[in-house]
Image (cartoon, rainbow over all chains, first blue to last red):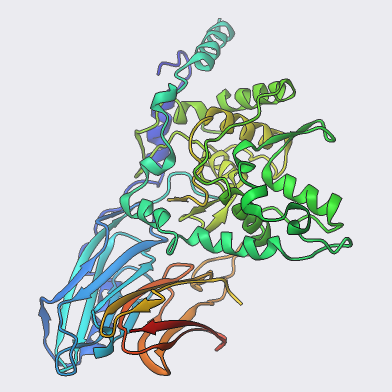
Length: 155
Length: 254
Length: 106
């Protein structure tokens, strides 16, 4: 796509536009202010109890077209009986202004511990799901999401 | 010398790379799988909320004439089928094309004795979504009349001319560089196959004119005012360029 | 009254696990967006969603500004008996909107 004597070719202009702040954001280093807020929020939920890995599956797209609406599904392996069920699932994030995303309260009547929702992610970050089982134990899973910005935004 | 070269370049640009009919792809094809999934499921597509709202408004009596859309047009599933697929359409009374939103407002003022609905208002989007939904699955097909010719030409000229501080034309991205990436996003071909569209960036339904304004702001050009003749001419050209493609309203796009 | 879309089967077998999908029109204003005058647009979200089945709570969600506009929530419940499912959304003004759906369980 050749354009002759103009000082900047359209291709270069596109690159400049991309460089001018619309670029992909990278995954953040783990230790920063809002990561701490997420850790604190998780502690407030869990107290001194251990958080086990396993049972929980948090599904998010690894690369997101638009951080305004990100489909999320969280499921927990559980027979969902009176004696063995998921009582609640809590979703946290590390880079939004607040660490909380949602808390879902289930119980044996749910039949299946799986919830889908659409969330907002302000930046590329880690999202964490913590499930509390009926016996008081905690299980978790995390997902790292890359959030891209729209190239042609409004205003 | 410079002007001669520019003229040659302009001519070359105007003749450049129109997308071959068999290579045309809807924005749907460039969207991420989860975005497509959101569109495909009528029980989860946020644009459907607007369609449902429009269905309610369709039977609501308004204005000095105390008349609803249904009073004249009956069941929209029959009367509105194919309508959105051929808009913008020529309005003989005005002597120029009007788009679907303008047509709805003309019905309101001329036949219902009501105030026109504001551009991008929830009600206008709901009504246009409901009407366009009745053409979902149908091919885009403008009526080819001689009267539309000058406006199609105007639209084409607008599509191919450079604008804004970035000095880019629509054609340079959407004819010549579709499929490539601009920052994190894939550049689509720019066919209005699903308007009004639920755009994730807006977190709401929005019209084609709103989307065009976003593009113009993106190249740092002064956007057309809502309802400006240039805006309608460009819509007309885009629908002509998308002729034969399937209407998907309400589409979901990033 | 916000526009709502609820999807669940009209009939189910006793003991069957059914999926319920809900969508409600709401901007979910986060409170972090800055308006044209430079001041923040006040927070205004749906913060609570409850599903009851013949008056017994079977699902509840606490929602925060990180939930996207036009909140979509899909969950499961066991079809225990015929009756009424009620869905309630409560916002920051403590106003609640409730929609009901019937289910026949064989």
